[in-house]
Amino acid sequence: MPQPGSNPNAQASTLRNLKVLVVLLVFSNIFVGVLSVYLLRAVDQRYSELVGQAVPALNDLRQLMSDTVTVMRSTNPNNLSGANGDAVAALLGSRQRLAQMKKSREEAIQDPYFAEKHEAAMAISQTGLEFDGICAEYLDIYTSGRRAEAVRLRDEKLLSTFDRHIATIGAAADAIEFTSLATSKDYSGRTNSLSTIVLGVASWPVILLFGLLLLTAVFVIAMMIAFRGKDLSDMP
Image (cartoon, rainbow, N blue to C red):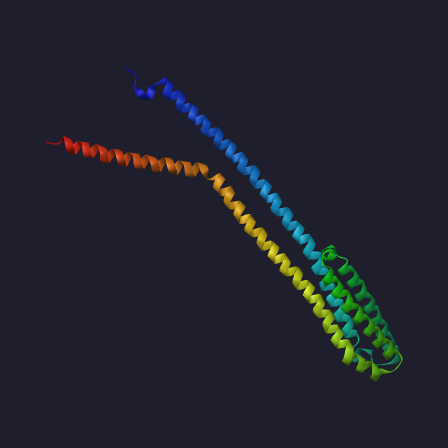
């Protein structure tokens, strides 16, 4: 008499179920792989855009700040004093640094980042033009020999204008860093959420196996309790 386990219909059904399970696993792995590649490319593109916008703008602002500080230092009367030849060379160098600072400012406010940041670009431009004018006036007065008047202008106007210009540049740089950090945090949160989804999809075979084991354990325990109750009821 053939055993129940050797029933051809049962074996065919088991084999068919195994084939279906294997196909589901293959498609699941393919889906997880495609989804992972898509998510990685999307995250990489977003971070590339973020870096591409923030880093050049920050570099331009840092260069502008450095050039502005250099110009201010070059107006120090101690650097302009000395023999006639040295004073002329120092004044010429100060004017060259002033021209370089103007060039750096134009490059900074023309960065694509400031295309939608008109207020920040306007503030940098206005304080910069004010600093340019007073600095040029100071150098002209100093060149004409009115050194006491030039020093007074530097102390009363140029220093305060310099401070406002530097503060405006620093505020623009801080805004870029704040926006970049906020955007990066948002990207990280989305990435974590999507990663959780991917892990959930990828782990469905483990969840299914755990569920089957749990059901099997519950079924075995239930059968043991049922048979034990039956054995006890059959006892004399």
